[in-house]
Length: 277
Image 1 (cartoon, one colour):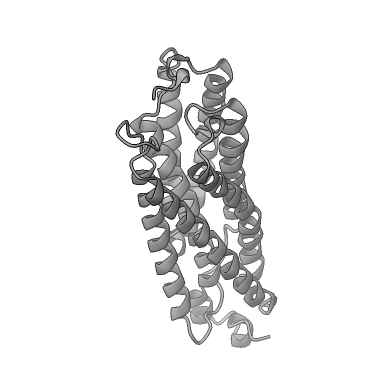
Image 2: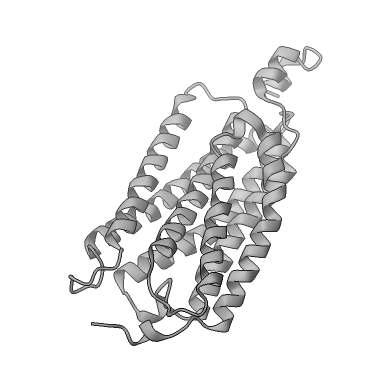
């Protein structure tokens, strides 16, 4: 069945939102590039992924602006950029938690962090893949998508990853609180607080995706839905994550790798370097 909205042009509000989104992300990209450079090797699993989020937003916004006089219809660009943006932000949050643990003294079972990193990366990647494929438009199914079940499973997996990150962040917070004398404590705390601020926004963003997968109400459609849906549940949620992560990354510039602290000895005060006092 053809949706009556398929002949409607995007509203002026949606077009203006795309212009604003493009300008905002173009501005934020410059400090993010500097943050990635300053965080260096220890931030490799966070900041390069975060940087890749910006070209996706640019492509999405420019496509919207160029095709502002064409009917609103689901398209490959919108589907892929939305999926990529969602994946990049979750992977960025995973990476920043991992980086917090890396700039602090590692516990005896340091492999635990690598296992959590690997599992969450894999689960999120599989989840976004299933949701993107299953939720793709299809004219041959009664649900209007390739596979409603795969779409639901994929979105559930992404939500479960977020719950796992809440537990990992809580565990990291307990560890951070016990290392107040460590030279990197302040930098780690800035990233920790940024992650705490970003998580609720990403939870709502993924929760919206799951809600639409379970109950595909027309007004919630990410492409053809209402302006309120796109502004509140997509733009605001994603921008909240971006601003929180950027602030945390900027304030944490200047940390010193633990190995370097131990090598330098910090005036032979090894107990402080290792966070034991």
